Image 1 (cartoon, rainbow, N blue to C red):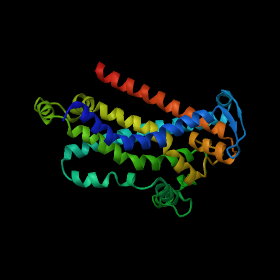
Image 2: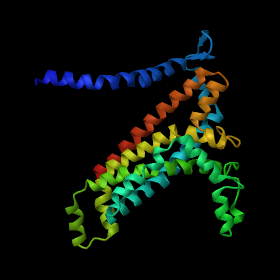
Image 3: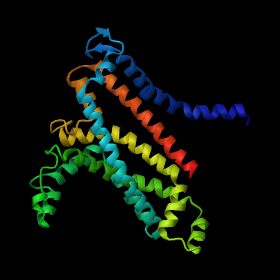
Image 4: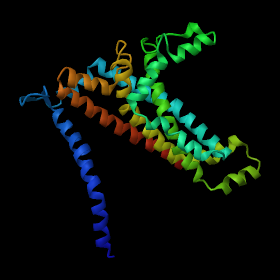
Length: 295
């Protein structure tokens, strides 16, 4: 087959997926950018050109900044808990060598559940009266710690983040486990023969060689912590309660666009979220890969 025919065949295979991507990702994104430049109620053909007014409004909107801060806290908590947990599980499974097939089936199970189903499950776990968490605390003599986890501004954001971590930590474990299994065993065996401890082998061999897997995991956490959070806050705290303690950028976008019919401002919020995710993701990739090259 000539190169031109090979490229044509490849293009024909890619075309359906590319068409769907353009229709459902590229076009809506560009349309949101266009709408963000107008004042528009959403259900009328009348719209007023606003230029960058909607974006200027963002800069002085305290609720938007509160939502953005909540998103940042969710991202930080997810990375601080899920990444070390996934690393620990991946290393433990690879070192044990037993039950790998079992773990590959069980670990992604929470990820296969829908966000709404997971959020509903954790509502029952957090229930102040009949919840599993408060029941365990009371049964172990720690009843003073029992509380309405989703009803308190001091605990609601963490309570919403925990189910997200529970959902994704298995997926991240498999992602890192794949990187560990790709490492040449002779390198690890040679280090063990030379007397390197488990920690030394992990820090000096395993972690540097799976750095790209870690980068992918971190970028996934950044993006998913922005996107997946809406379903959890909407179901568990009705979109930002109590007192906007769990307000996030996606929930604020939905409130402005669909509750107050400010589609121009809602689109500006969405565009700002997209730009922010791109900037943070590129920065994270450059920093992590740059450290890997220096190492």
